[in-house]
Image (cartoon, rainbow, N blue to C red; front, side):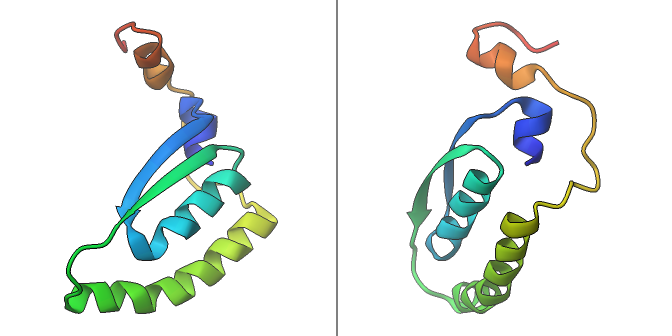
Length: 92
């Protein structure tokens, strides 16, 4: 939501660990951002299993966020850097 409201992002490519890319894309879609995700699956070490277990709870919170759409705590002022960069101008 912050990416859309602060930076004006309406499309995003997300690259992250494979076990939570679906959640990240779903949250983008819920915020009105067209998201495309690429999940990276490396070797499964102890941190991968921790992340997978954590994902169970994170997915539940994401469902609540997508359903009720709470406002961000720290929204901030509108930034033009992304828009200017995509237009070929320099951010000021």
